[in-house]
Image (cartoon, rainbow, N blue to C red):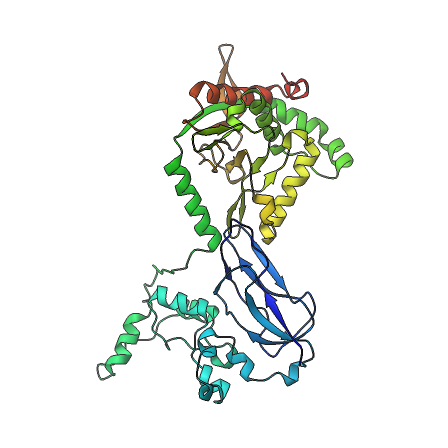
Length: 415
């Protein structure tokens, strides 16, 4: 027997620990080299853990929902084994609690010893929902209770109350289980590690920055006209569509060059002025908000920006963004307009000192030269850290963005 260990990938210095999601293989099953065994969620990204070699998965050291650190052993593979020959006792090691059981318990049939035992993630859900141990039937290996079993039990209609003669323990079990509220159901689900981290950073931003927001309205007609004029040629030349975000990124960089403090950050009692422009693009994902970075955005063409943003969107949807793609950034842009937002006050992404909020472009009545006319208007909002950015720089910076969007030729001549 040749046993090799499956370990947690090396996490970044800023990530102390991660959470195991759900094993895709069970003990005793054959695995192929580089086959994904499980995904591990950090507070920034979700990492895939592949099998280092082909063989048979003989032991799960850490179960679903467990907390792990870099290089921790989470499973073992027998490279010489065959799926049919895998020992039933190996499945017992999949549950940390069972691994610590006395040797005598290991000798008992696995189906008898593991029936009703909840996996770590399932046990946490049951505890959060007030569900008593043993109240959920298990469909997992050897009758173990999985996370799916708990969610299904919580969503299923509850049985009628026990008769008065029922034992006291049975009555307590019924009372502990979630109560059906008819048309008003509730479900308690723990935050993912990513969502918890987003919450932490937003609170940190609110408590450590002196946040103020300035607004302005932009006539998007010139950008829309230019986009319409060159869309076909742009698509044929670059293989991607010309969107609005590239204009917003270019306009932001244009303003940051004029007012460098908008691109700066606070470090203790120092102001750090960055000589580069790494623009964070807020992207929604199934697991929460992520902000991948456009590195050296000032050196990127419109096509480069559009392609990179499309790549970020795809990776975010698939949970494939890497830690290095979301580290750093000197300024951010949040586009709530894709969801129909008219106006908002975006929260600064620390340690940055400013963020631009972009919203939906709508036809609105405005006054030009004393006449009421209809124009496609977008309300821009820029939140900034008033500790280092004065109102003058913030307002003039947003005006510079407005001017660049209302006369895109300025971007070509940097004026």
